[in-house]
Image (cartoon, rainbow, N blue to C red; front, side, top):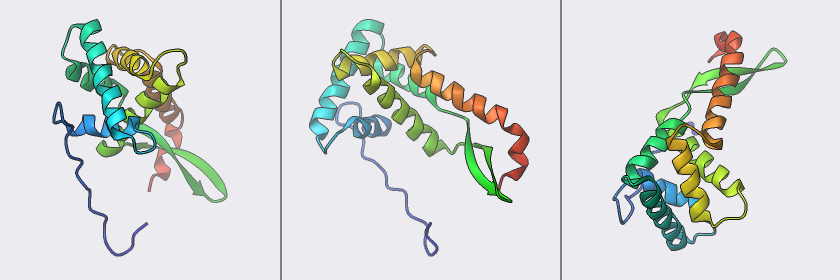
Length: 156
């Protein structure tokens, strides 16, 4: 942890098609080995699939999916007197977004047998409906925080 200065938050420039900072971060999460143009192509093809299946603006579906996946609480480990406790804490807004993006990409990649654009589209559509593995991960995180509510007084 820095002791002298607080690190400045760098803004991510918006993507080329929708001029959205969130979508730009999503493309960066999809990206592997620095192949950004490939990640952009996957993302935009995924949005085309969403447009065809849902017959709605894919950006709205994507933002709805993000809202459904963003966690409110999470547990953090804290060592108190030789014992480690899982302490429920609220999640900062930047971290909420980062976790949601990470979970959507992670669970889309876990699926087998389809191209990445198909898997991403399916995960985003399911998340926008409040279903899917990413939403289940959020609910598990909330459940864990609720179960450890007794240790909330150890918060720092």
